[in-house]
Length: 153
Image (cartoon, rainbow, N blue to C red; front, side):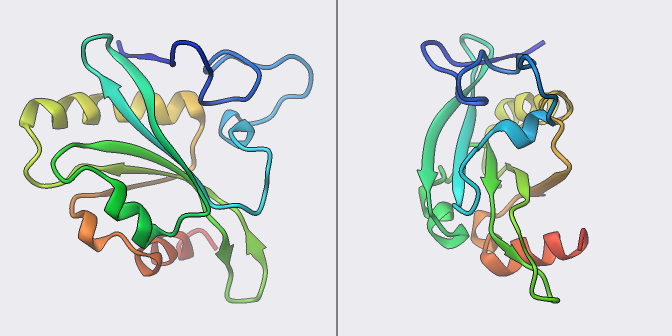
């Protein structure tokens, strides 16, 4: 089983160890990721095969989907956790936390299997509810994400 964490700092929940339940108020683990509502915050996560751990690769703030796709590796899978500013058709604004599995065509089959096998456990542990998968990073855009989120209303 793949471990989740990062040596030296916790990338998932500020002030506590990765995936650890906090003391006091119970919140969904995925909702504890960011405390600053209103910002587009991205955490690009990869699997360190040697350590068999899910680790933070890069973190971005106020980046659009179009900008993000230029930052992702072309031939390596990634998990992306995206706090997205979503404007509903009725004018409301929400900040859904999206888990996006990027598995571009051309990845090594071994890498695809490792990521695919880790995805379900990671989503379950973090309690993500907006989970998407995309094979072609060129298809990733604001329009694509809004269409996916429109299903949840």
